[in-house]
Image (cartoon, rainbow, N blue to C red; front, top):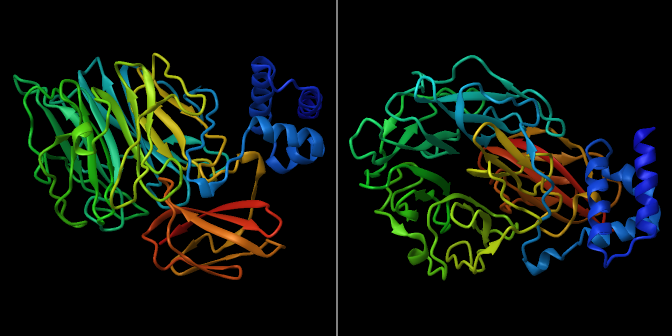
Amino acid sequence: MLHSRQLSILKNKLLHLDTNSIKEVSVCRSTYINIRKNISPVQIKRALGGAAFAVLLQILPIQSGAQNRAVFNFGSPQFNPFGLQSIQGASITLPALTDLDNDGDVDMIVAFSDTTAYQSIFKYYLNEGTINNPEFVDNGASIFADSIASADFIFSAPVFADLDNDGDQDILAGTSDYASSTYDGKFIFFENTGSATNPQFAAGVNNPFNLTPLETSLFWIPALADIDADGDLDMLASSYYLGAQFFKNSGTPNAPQFDAPIDLSTAFEISQQIGFSFPALADMDNDGDIDIFINDYYSAAFIFFENTGTPAAPVFSTGVQNPGNLSVTQADLTPNLIAFDGDPDLDLFTGSVTGVIFRENLQFGVGFNNLMVQSITVSPTVSHDVINITNLKKPIQQAYVYDMLGRIQPVVISGNTVSIQSLTNGTFHLVVIDNQGEVYTAPFVKQ
């Protein structure tokens, strides 16, 4: 009954909306966002009717994916959602997210600074909900060979990546060598010696892969991605005194070897100097290359650097502050961009002083806002070679597959069958557009 009343109110507001009134548009957007938490896009579309629905699409603008321009529309920040709770005694809480057990949803590790014991501790949260209704639960059982707790560092910023190319997710954490007199920044590598479905992490190794401590770096905040499309993972890392630095991987996918760091602005001829910041690397506009996204400490703003070059030859445009209705709260720290809620757009998680903050991305970078998107069924949902679309009644006009960082992946589609043999193991999202322009999406796992 409450939802029906809200839809009726929204419909009336849309039919009488002054689109030049920022206040009225904002009210309609907020009402829609609240309704969408409990009602499917299809139900909203039917309840509003054609005229009101058209107005809603106008204030949640659609942009052609062929233009390869960034389109974001982030919702309001939510503090400790999906069953998360503040950790008692934690002064800094920094999350890392991935599908750690390869079941099709996103799990989380949180590194928090324990001010009582004066050490950094990792906590594992397993997603025991569904991709559309996530629920993070403290796993309890350790997935680490040794305790992550260490008095050698009170601060650590973890990131997930398959650094040894064996098909599972490892952890690289940036931290500070508290045991040294100079407080040099260092990196710690935790190899996943388990599997893609049953993670187990070995004891941490300090400064692996040719990484060496730098005096005055204090601590490091890392982000990993193949930024130059040569098949291995490069690193962008920021430190308090040195600012944003680029570490090119001159090794192989199986055996990384990072070159000495270069100032990020110098490495990619970015016009702006990027100082201490919290970085993330992802394909935010779904155009096939890696973009840079940072939470800039000094300007207190999220800044998006779009890659206007190619996957192999990145060129970054001038940074845009706070795209897609974003604004930095006093609590925001490290950003994590990941396809989280059943569609391939990248949602935003950030660490904070006392917990985790979530902002849903309400619009695909490929140009479709989430109100248009409907679910389809694929079978099997976990496969090695092919998946089949089972409930699409109209012919497919276009189809795409995206990984969890928003990158388009090459697949072969024939009729309603998708060949996924070329994909690496992991979680992906299929997006299908039928011959009537309707948009559908479904997650699946390649094993």
